[in-house]
Every structure is written in C-alpha cells, then in structure tokens.
Image (cartoon, rainbow, N blue to C red; front, side, top):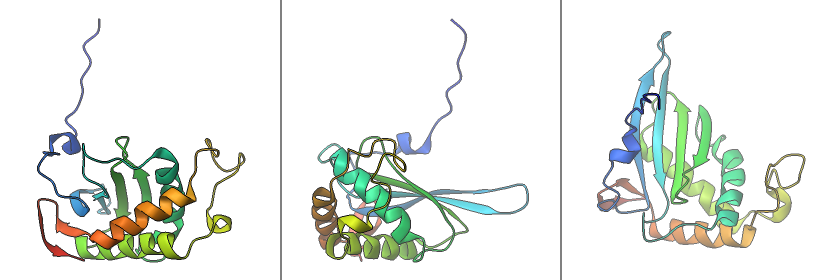
Length: 163
C-alpha cells in the first residue's frame, strides 16, 4: 500500500462537544498570490451530535439560501452543507465580519421560513438538480423558523451575544 498524506482540516480539530449552536464562526482566511482574500465561515445551524437537519429540508435550504444570500452579502462564492447536516461552509471574497454574515444568514433563513413558496425554490427539477426528488419546503421552513427563533451567537462557545 502506498503512503497517503492526509492534511489536517481545521474543522476536524474543533471540539464539537463544546460549541453552542446556532452560531457563525470564522474558520480562517487565505490570501491568494495577487492579494485577494477568501474567508471561510462555519455556519452552524443545529447542535452537533444532538440534531441534524433531514436531507430534504437541508437540500431545500441550500438551494434557496444560495440565491437569498448573494444580494445580502457581497462576494459569496459558495455555501455548501456539511455532510453531518448540522450547517454549512460559507466561502466569500473579502473579509466580512461575523456579525455581517450572521445578519445575512438570519435574514435569509427568515425569508425561507416566512416568505418562500415552492415556486420560488430554485433547482427542483431533473434539469437543474442531481437529486431533485430530495427536497422538502415544509422541513426547510420549520427548521429555518426554529433556528431564527434561537438566534445566532457570534462566538461558537458562548451565547452571550446573540443576533
């Protein structure tokens, strides 16, 4: 068997038993060769190892928040769900504050909970989605409303400042 190098991934060094979701956390920034900065955020929606958002609801949140977030937060590159189904990685150009990200995520989830109809959810057919049958707007609305009601902490280990 050949030697295989596996790099350390910051997210796997985080003590998932100590965090208090929902929260927004800056994982880190990287500066490219031309000086461009990319920021990576941990958008934790539910408590790790205690809850997980069902795939249909998370899939619908993913498709919907991708479009709702861009007008609210400059430089969004991607927002992708964690495999554990407890939240998302958000990758953006530049260095928005945790508060700016939290407000944009909160407002987007509020829209999902209160304003989005099935016709507004993008990518729900075979042409535009690789697993279009696995969506649930009902679940997305329920989870989004619950998360918004609890607010986002600006510190993953402390819920003193919640927006």
